[in-house]
Image (cartoon, rainbow, N blue to C red; front, top):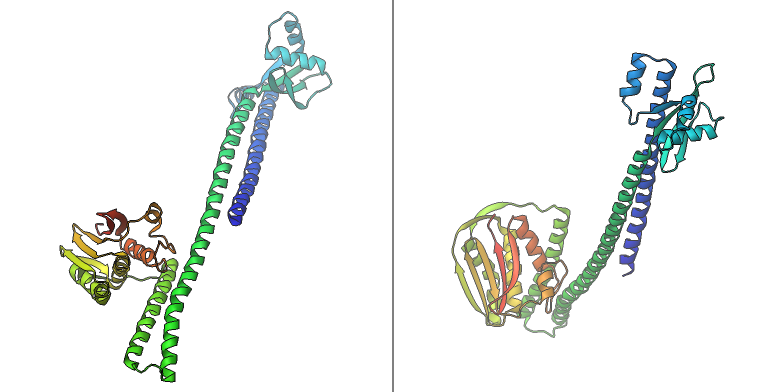
Length: 384
């Protein structure tokens, strides 16, 4: 729980700082871009007023600028505006220039009621004629404000989503650690049981307490085999994680493959007195025989463990079905039955079915588990 919160907090802090930096960069860039374009437009207009020519006029009129500046000759503008009672940007600019006669030759950003303008007062000759050149950037500023609001909304949504994802990642890490902890606990238990059995029989043989040496050796060999199988699966999972498993595809009939697998479970099926029903619509498939043998063995082993009275294996239309009449799967089991380290009630180490799924999917096949006819059925779909 602590790690889940920490990851969520870290993600929130990192994404928030990143978004604030991005917002500031966008804000500064847009405002600087508007300012630079407005100033350039004013300079082009001033150049035209200083040296009227076709080139300077075209640069002023059709230059590659975001804005086109307007200009007023203040003496005429003041005279005209004294008779003009209507609201206009020209009127607002004229009023500002009248109120600020000393602000010459520099460009100022001025707020005029609901308008925002860059203004430069220019003294062009010795006659005292002053021109006011201005660029109205109100629309551009409003557009920037809208863009920034949208950006903030998007960033807030992304920040929340990133935080939620961070919390889920933390939860997933916690769950994975819990699964691994349970796995090592169960694996230790599973390894300890045969080790104790081996130790007990070894000490009995050494001290002469056990007289049936052949039987003792068989038990020791059986327990060593169980340990070896478990260690092999752990190592194989590690290879899958590293992507270092090499597949050697060969052609084999389904009937032969299933027959070889069932041979290894003959005594176990007999000892549990299970009824075995096999119906194979035989065909040849191209698989890594050893790996597919392991995958099917793990699923059949799971079926034998839970079966009450019978097991049925069918192959038809490229689908291998392995059914047992054991306890049906709960909703949680159905979701997690193939997850690594997950063990349902009565499970072993939690790696058999997850390993089987990895092998099957690397063959471009699929596998699913479902409750079926009062039991559980695993279906391997070999259609590519």
